[in-house]
Structures are given as C-alpha cells and as structure tokens.
Length: 149
Image (cartoon, rainbow, N blue to C red):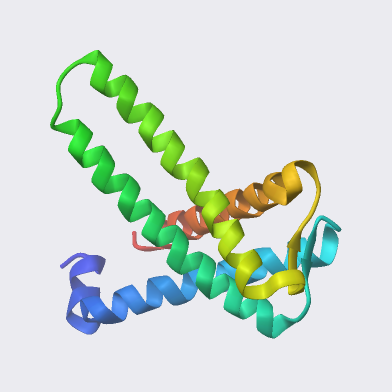
C-alpha cells in the first residue's frame, strides 16, 4: 500500500484540502511578514492584518488559478496555432490583471494599513511578494512529495 493510499484511509478529502490551504496561508503569512520586515516597499501595520491579508491572498490567488485553468481547458479544445497564441495571451492577461485586481482589493479593504510602494504604484513590489509566495509554496510541495518515498 502506497503512502498516498494510507493517507486516504486516515484523512478525508476535506481534511487534506483544509491542511493544504492552512499550510499555504501560513507560508504566505511568513513571506509577507519577512517582506514587511526587511523591505521598505512593503508595509503591513500589524501581525493581525498580515494574517487577514494572507488569507485574502490565498483565496484570491486560488480563485485566479481556477479561472486560468478553466480558460486553458476551454482553449485546449480548440485546434490551431492561432488559438494557442490567443490562449497564451489570454492566460497572461488573466494572471497580470488579476494581480492588479487583488492589489486594488487589498488597498480598498486595508487602506494605508497595507502598502506596496515603489515602481508602478507598488505593482512591482506586490508581484515580487506574490511570486515569492508561489515559489515558497511549490518548494514546500516538493519537500512534502519527497518525504512520501
């Protein structure tokens, strides 16, 4: 019996999903906290706000990824180079525009309590934070998968 089959006997799908989101939210919290502490382009007024921001980011990023997958799946049913080009442009636009929407949502919700400063009104700093969050999440996933063996 594989490790995954053993886990299936121990944990329900809801428990595994909760575990995954909890872990990723905590990773996002750590990354956001480190950026806020060590880079003056990221300001978070308090730890409590950082927790709420990490939760909001996790929810909105997962929502964005689900939209990206749906659009990608739709384009995968369409043949031709033109459709592949449109797919690439569409996915890039979704990923980029979604970051602007998420940044604006954080700005509306928290005002000056959470700030991303610098080039393009903080967009570059925000994208840097998000990128590091996603990389950190993937590193943890790879570590967890390596421990299954």
